[in-house]
Length: 129
Image (cartoon, rainbow, N blue to C red; front, side, top):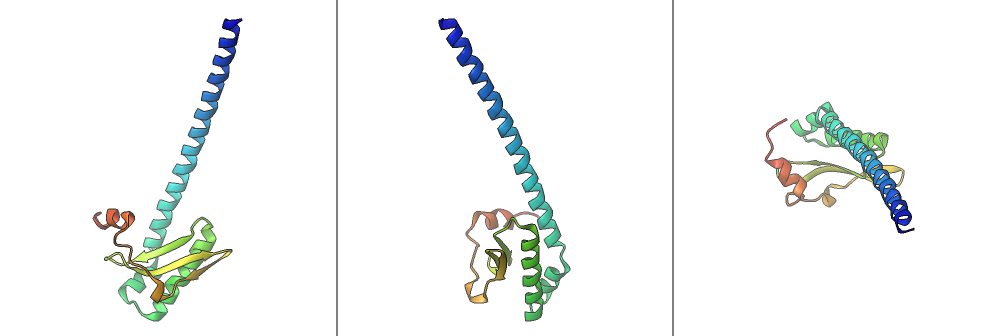
């Protein structure tokens, strides 16, 4: 009786471990897909002529074009809550926030300094590219 109970529990435990392993493997694949997608998105935005034009000549019309581009990008992707464009000092120069089913540009007065954030500090010291 003891042996039967032990083998039943052991088989159930083995099935649970296999199920959890399968779940972890599936989640890992999903996370890698999301990270690769985000990497691709960064490259697309980095190559954006609108963003390059704004950085070269930060006038109001170029800023509005970048805000519009980021808004449309955010809405088309559907996975981002915010998109930020930071200057070399870590200060936001453009930010777009999701608002329900829409996305809106943040006013200049509401832009924030992100120079103390881990994501800025870790990227600041990387080589170009």
